[in-house]
Image (cartoon, rainbow, N blue to C red; front, side, top):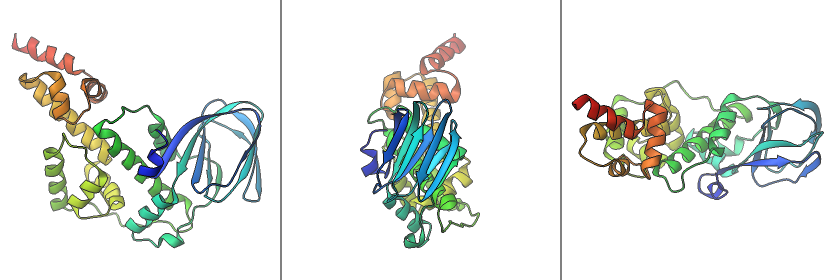
Length: 276
């Protein structure tokens, strides 16, 4: 994910090669997460007045709040996924969760394991299709998920939300809106406005109510819509891809293959074989 995402959604990620030896990291205006990616190395970390000597293994996470500097010394070259998280993203998530943002402060953690944060980081680092309609929604959803997870698990004031779900009316309104705007560049803000709730609450309640994160649900509905049009056989694949909200035919093919196990061309062949 390119650095400009830091301004637009409040989080950015890069895969960074670290050479063996001492690396000094100055204090930053942003929160930093470093996720070890690859073979283990022996590491000596000094940060926040503490020293940590450990074997750094694949998936180990260091969480360094904004304003803290540190030193990391590794006995071999290694690779990390470096996430930069804007404090404003956490403040916005705290406000949406009806918490006092001034009382939410991130706690330093070292050699920590969190499968959820690791999954979000790798999803953010995955190659994306420039200007694809789903990219912004995916990035916003992942950024929101990361902010909520950091607040809930790594701050001095955790978010304690009730196990509520969307109301039937909210669900119906969201379903209708999504189905009517599959070819649009949907955003979390759009959908939150439809449901009449905050973006952070939408992210949590949508998953509880539909069983999928917002972006995964929208992509699945786009794929299902495209599959229906393909079975009708009235439009070319390229036009169907655009009408279903995909940037181009290959973007549709990738999503359809992943979700349905068949490409658009393969689905067309099956329709023709069935009609023969």
